[in-house]
Each structure stands twice: as C-alpha cells, then as structure tokens.
Length: 241
Ligand code: F6R
Image (cartoon, rainbow, N blue to C red; front, side, top):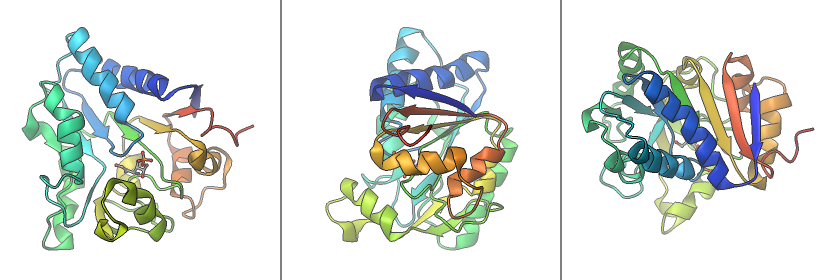
C-alpha cells in the first residue's frame, strides 16, 4: 500500500486528480470509478481545471459511481447523480450516457444486480476513487458487510446517517438505505485510490493500514488489494506510526 501524506485539501485534490488524469491521458477509453461526499471535491475541482488547461478529453471515458441513496431520483439535490452532474460531469466533455450511477429509484432489490455486469461489460474499472466513513465504510458497505458482496441495497448505520445529515435540512430527511457497489465489486478494480482528511478519519485510516482484516472494519479488505494508494492529510494520518 502506497501512503502519501499531504498538508492541505488542495494538495489531496492535486495528487489524486493527477493520478486520475494520467489514466485518462494514457487510455482515452479508460473506465473510472468515482465517489461522492466532501472528500473528492478538491479532486473534481482540480480535474475540471486541468482538463481545460491541458485539453484532456473525457469524450470516450466511462465512469461508474459507487453508490446512490435509495428513494432519491437523479434530480433530487441530495442525490449522488445530482452531485456528480454539478461537481464534475457538467464541466468536462464526458458523454452523459457513459456515466453510470446506481439508480436509487428501484422497485425491486434485484434490479441493482445488473450494475456489476455493466462494469464487467465495460472492461472493468481501471481506477476506483474512494472516500472512507468514520466507521471504516467504503462505498456504503457498513461494518458487518460480507467481503463477497456485490452491488446491493444496503442499510445505513445511524452513525452514517448522522454524519451525512450535514447535507440535508434535517436528519429525518436522510435516506436510511442506499444502493452500493459491494466490497467485491470494489476489490475488482485494477487500482484504488482512497482519500481522507480530518481527525475524525484517523481511527479508520489506522485500522485500514494496520488493523486485523475483518468485516468489523470494511476498509481493511483493501489490505488484500495489490494496488492501493492512500492520499490523506496529516490529521487523517495522525494515528499512524
Ligand atoms: C460516497 C461514499 C462514501 C464516502 C464516505 C466519506 O460515494 O461511498 O463511502 O466516501 O462516507 O464521506 P465524506 O467524504 O463526505 O467524508
């Protein structure tokens, strides 16, 4: 595992953005896995600025997002589809039909199973961007999730609902379920880059790097992946030796 510790959020965006932009430059048909939340914002800002500056085209790139809240449509301003549209897709030349975010508007839980097939048919994910929850979740795979899980409907823990209530008017508005790529779906990516900032992520980062591999801390599964880079700030790294 490659661990890069930086000082600022801006540097996280620059280092992570460069990793992703290099994939796009190397292979204009690359398949990129994306995340939402606060952590990737500086990365998306950097990607937008530098795609313009360096004339990097996303025209033939395909993207797959990790997750979506169950029950929110893509036009809801707290949906992850909306987040991606406004924080990235509207500002690069990607074709919207090549951007995949799991649908939160499903009628049966079985409908979500096609997502892993779609990823496979696209050739698999070349690089997957991840954030991390304070409880060690990646995607919305909460503690206790099987390491064999594929994309499915998942229950959010109270801790995650509480953490994400900052984006909603009220905690009661936060959906209690989501559709998330599974841990196996994530592990299938050829390369993974995980970003974290702030003291509240320090315990999860310590578990990720040195903890026993266990479903109690879903992030520990990444110890079994051959190509993982962590790009974290000093606060998130503060419990590492
Ligand atoms: C988002 C996702 C989540 C977040 C995590 C951290 O697509 O899958 O795992 O990465 O909850 O969120 P932030 O970055 O808001 O602290």
